[in-house]
Image (cartoon, rainbow, N blue to C red):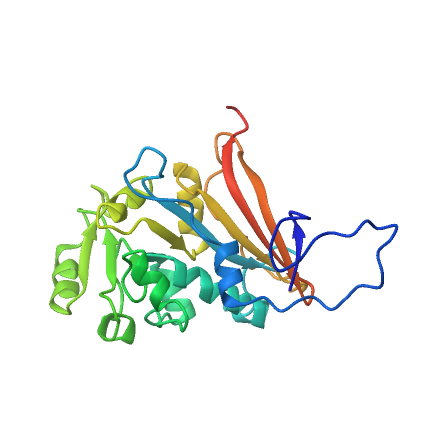
Length: 277
């Protein structure tokens, strides 16, 4: 793996060499899990004056032509390095927020313990693994699946107070922890980060799908986007990474980093402001 941007930071990519004196390209250095973790470390979060109350990061993969899946699954667009980064992002998070449709489509399972992260998580006061928080209005989920019956930490179900009462009761009977983050049938996206932070889950990661990610963007709460770009074209009618109404004004994001391996680009953008601002 090699760093393309920033071009000359301290780290495993080493110092840059002027193009006029550069020798033949050397093989890209192998990055350790610790170096990947430092690259994607969350900013300070908490209740201090210099800390963010929470940080919501999105992580998605897309093909060169903008598709987010092939045949209904994102796996054909992934790679070994993409899955490595995917695992590190999860290992850094307090909670993984995901839409119910993505849970069904991708066959979500509980988060796994990641070797090499136990001490890091303990030092930050984190649980052994991130909680999975499923966002659903209809609560039409199979609560007998391992995601709900075998998690290391309890899976959360985020919904609104107007969700079907009988389904809320059924979820609770199955041992699922139901968390309200809205007054209607579904969640209020703007309230989700604060509700989770109130439970001590401040380092937040969302893996979509595109509707949920679009709702977070529309609510102005998506702090960061990690986008893996696969060197593949799939055509077809697969959606983009976000789906929803057009924003009143485009949101502007600042490029924070780009890594590359085997033609895959791993980009990281931080929200700065709306263009109208």
